[in-house]
Image 1 (cartoon, rainbow, N blue to C red):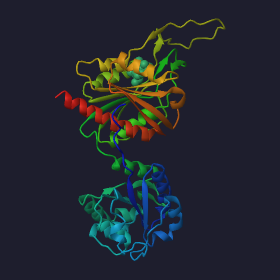
Image 2: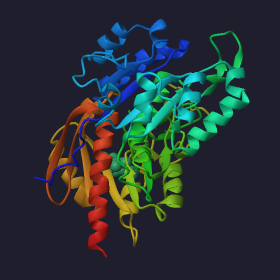
Image 3: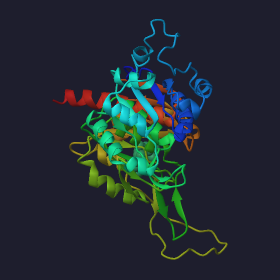
Length: 405
Ligand code: C5P
């Protein structure tokens, strides 16, 4: 049995809601956070309760909502201190002009603002306001002060506003805030490292309209890229054709064929500390791609296929290879075939998954195979699997690096 995966304790956040029309987006955000296994304590200002009810937020968070400094549910009436103790962050969504001004000046005249002043955890705020309120010099001064004070600003974005105007001040969408918050909460296992990842399928053209490809959505590779970024790494993502949005912070190289992917990997491999080959690279390509569309004649068609280069094996055979991780999708004898692949390609870590379970799905179950043994990550969403995997890779990478010193 391999030594256990890095323990990830449950995260806890205090979600503050202030009185703006974007408050409705906080409901969606709570759903996303809870689904991700994060404990959420909602605290609302009086004005927020005019836009969305505490009952809604209680139902979504599964916890009573606090709105009042003098709430008798906390025995010693210390809600303004108690609620944020042990929290990983306070996240204010939306943060109105008025609330930002209060924060910038350290005012504490209601439960949420007092909690923010009395906190010992990071504070993240998602501003939401009319564009002129955002552009107002006092608001800009307050925002600059908050940034200097170490408060993390999530947005705002530019776009349609509830007032009918268009401009800066629109709150980020719940999904964007969710991604920023979960990224912020991740331990920075990979700070200072460069991670090179291949993802998606490759497409080997037969003629201008036809080709050979593999069934890969790219979801696992993209989730790993995001998790590596969240863990503090610099990420280069070499991706075959997929219909996913790449993480904005990654350096992205879009390729089509295995040959293109190989060239892109060659360019970056020597500077990489870790290489994760998640791509489903086509094993063969046609010996000669036809420039013109091959006409249908009704007769048999012979295509000569030649093998593609094995990108992962090439990287692993470099004189000073990065820490290499491979993926094996098998339809049977999962561990046996994956381990054989690991030995053949000479990679320290192979991640095995069942092809019929993994391809295109939103969740996955994987087994990690290395010299020490095997370890299964139970079925979870691909982003969750990616986070656990990145934590494990970071641990293995560091112990290898220490040994080679
Ligand atoms: O295709 P195969 O099952 O051998 O793939 C296992 C691992 O090798 C995967 O990590 C995949 O990205 C990598 N691979 C590669 N180049 C190939 C074939 C596979 O890098 N030509």
